[in-house]
Image (cartoon, rainbow, N blue to C red; front, side, top):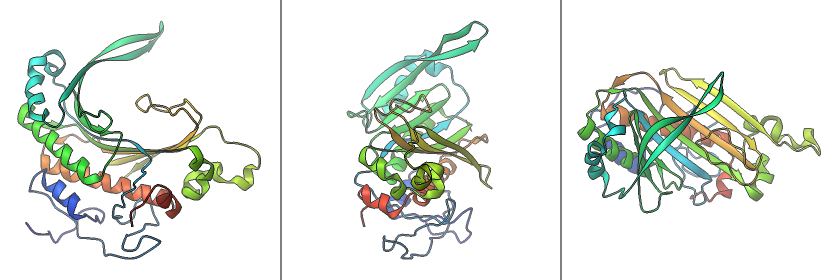
Length: 313
């Protein structure tokens, strides 16, 4: 396999581990050329960015990463047998059980808001397949989606490789013809002593008035949350939410609140255009979405942030 000469979309820098992970999805993909290696900022040999949607940035592992959740998800048209037939799901379980030996079925509850007020609704069953450490990796299967998530993140190549295995198993078992949505989401959270130095760790453009200590004087910001949706020229979207939250508060039921004041950076990149369920195409988009999220992240934070959380040089 060689490099294709035609670039597609924004420039993407792929390291060896990420390339091997991407190969797990299939062989029919196009990889844009490498971004030239430059030395800008403190991290010699790493490409720094001055724009949230600029050239790719080579991944710099953080030994104390503040990442609290990473999720990769693919949605497909509803297969109701997944909810009702445990024997049907057992085939999928056997395909991934070596890596995810613990199965925990869960009944989901939703709410219906109507003239009579808020009424609880049964939202059906989801199947959670976990590693021995459930915070490490978890596969979730529902009638309309499969996802891979982790609360303790290692590195991008591990996410890509594991998700490729899960999607291969799903295709071999369920053979979905259509993919309704592809999404990748990263959630970072800063708490404790680092929160008091947030203006040194995050760009002023991101913090806004919450980071202008001189203007605020003795006034404390208790709650300040930005919610921005970016439409990209490939019809995908990136939703960014960031800001300060008080103890016990959350902006999303899927994100467990912190027990102390915190600052979050939540980046969700996705496409909702139905397309053929093609592993190579899905793998290419998941890789590209991870790359764009990381570029945005590196734009949003400073070198002091990287140092604070253990950047490996």
